[in-house]
Length: 187
Image (cartoon, rainbow, N blue to C red; front, top):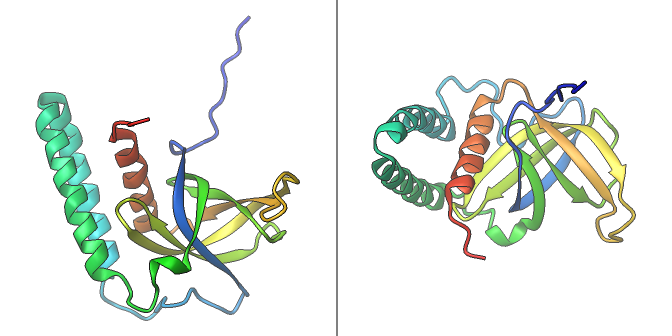
């Protein structure tokens, strides 16, 4: 008798090279730059909301006219690149990120690290998605940290979930994963 395999993942996961920087937060800290009293919607959240609506319309169009949907998707990526470059924080150069191969999805990421982080630790993560250079800053929780033993420089495999209420980061990561899936491979 065949048994059905239960899929535990909520989002599709890819391996990708990104820029990554993180710091451990103690219980009293908020993420750097996070203003809990802010009433207006941050610009990155507004972009994420527009991208979500754009993706819904493009997905509908994809069934009727795939070429047009692909052209609109490429145009949207170009606009995202321009926005990312114009919004990049001048005091955070790209070089300050460590370039790492990660496993990434809409729910979080996993990466090799130098520290054995306790499960439940809160991290402030800065991620630079490539090639769009979209910068994401968010809080995540360590859900696992296992010793790899194969890489002396990065001996731990750290898995981090995005905070449940951070829908804009989830949307950005989902969009990034989908866009990476649509790019034809040249290798």
